[in-house]
Length: 308
Image (cartoon, rainbow, N blue to C red):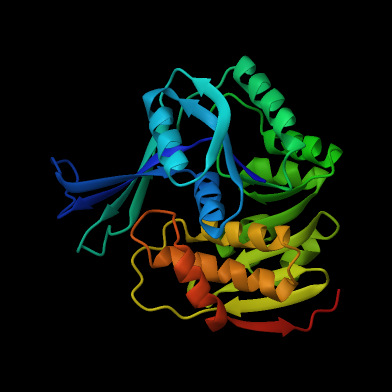
């Protein structure tokens, strides 16, 4: 089983707007809601790929119950800690007006108590022995320390489990202090971390702390470093619907392929195919198995000479 940790799940909404005028009433003409949060997308993608997938999270109020029900419908087992306050909502605005099309507005989510965190940690420890890989992604609600991911990674390492992480800021910096298996980040996040978007500079910064590095470059594809190999992979797609959640689906593809002990080139291909498949689907942060299988043979994979 692959366990995905989502500290701050959400209800993600597509909201259609004809116009957005500051200071005036703006009416949403249509809305569609989906289970959200970075690790939620990862867990959903893994289930679609055929993995046994569990989502571990803080479940807030009626919003949390709704998210759990939607995940169960799609074959994702859920577990975690229940909260009184509702989980957050996140909006992606769609419009013919390109100035704000695909604009996202994200609520902060509920606040956590010390007991909430302790219950979460204990439940996580009980689940670890049944997992093969841990995926941790996204922000934390208020009320936890900036080294919370680091603590969970350390616990995972004590059980011999590998963690793939997708987060930013102090949580990432503190996680790097303890080291972990895999990191997914985009160009903006790479520049914040090491002052450069160069994979070579990034690998120097991460040297000895991370085994697998996945650097995504949007339409330019993926650079993946693993087992001493630097792989560049990309695939061309037509009819893109929405890129929202494609990075999370890419993480899921990598986790799936690592769990299957695939080669670095095949891991990169699965990551790219899953990220691209998400772009073809109207449902936010979700992919379809048939799209992944169709795209896989089309992924262009190239190994780059890299001297450490």
